[in-house]
Length: 463
Image: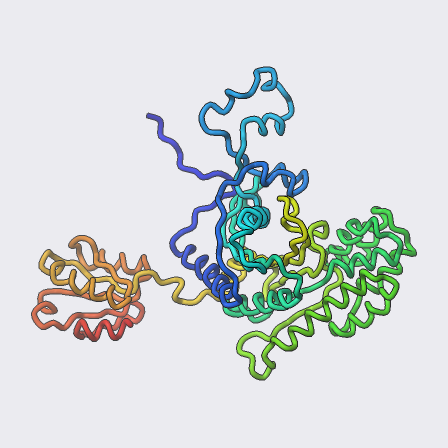
């Protein structure tokens, strides 16, 4: 039998025990904040019907869907002449009726429609699950990765948007980040800008270009706008808008003057002002705040998938490290229209768990507890010590202390090396003297200090 070299598919990863503790720290922190704001967890299947996913992400997105072959003889229902077709998409549709979940949003829309008679609207849900994309693997981009989404559907209240700003602020603050910015814009404001220069039909071209302002500067944006069909005079009209400076209130006042002729643009400004107004009433005064101060910035260059969003748009940047956005989202209309239930507006956000992990790692912000597994190891020198230790082992566990016994008798050096390799902070040494006196030796592996105390004192110390 040939030996197979162990490997995993490109774009996927194994996670070690220490990595899983850190990842779960992120997931648990975020989910605790979601629950605090009234969001309930749901899960959807790893696989969806291919028809559920197809046509929802555009032509490029459809190409990245991982299709699942029909079970059994998947070619049996495909005529021989069709197998010679050069159209791989056509053949795939014949031999595959299911696919791996591409994102959490479309399955959520399907879920809402299927369960609409059981759901209380507005419906607030969150999901933390893996998704799969047949993308080209590269640094920071994987074929399997987790998304952390929260959405509320069936409500057009802008209180939802305000609370999402607070959810970002609280969750990232709990994770230890002290300097991050929640950026906000509105799709209607961007539409208004396109309208006042007479290029409403080129809004996507305009926003794709200005979204790159941080990377290529205004000159680069100008060149791209000209390539996309804008004139020099139109670019001069846009320039003061995308270069807006000052406080959020000063930016809004300038925009209200510039967009006076655009009803849509003024509506976008009004929505942003309403969100700010809600936040003023929801945010604790700075003098009473524990943790980072809320840093909210109106950014007119923020675009985020404009053919998808219809109202407020969010993006979160970590300012302490060089990293792309660590979160984003926005308002969308008619989420469930693709499945036959129209006019159900919603708003949602997502946390970029993998990027957040990298940020916390770089800033050394993971708590010490995330590097600890077993808290205490009980030594095992012979059968007598083992029999003595087993009741103590269970007593420790019943007290909520993570404990294990070395599984077989061995020399002290080997057992100490095991504790060191697993970062176990304490070891209980049980020899003949300890069994006779009932005073057990507790060694602190970090300091090397050792003390003889009773089992009850050990439990009190480790608790």
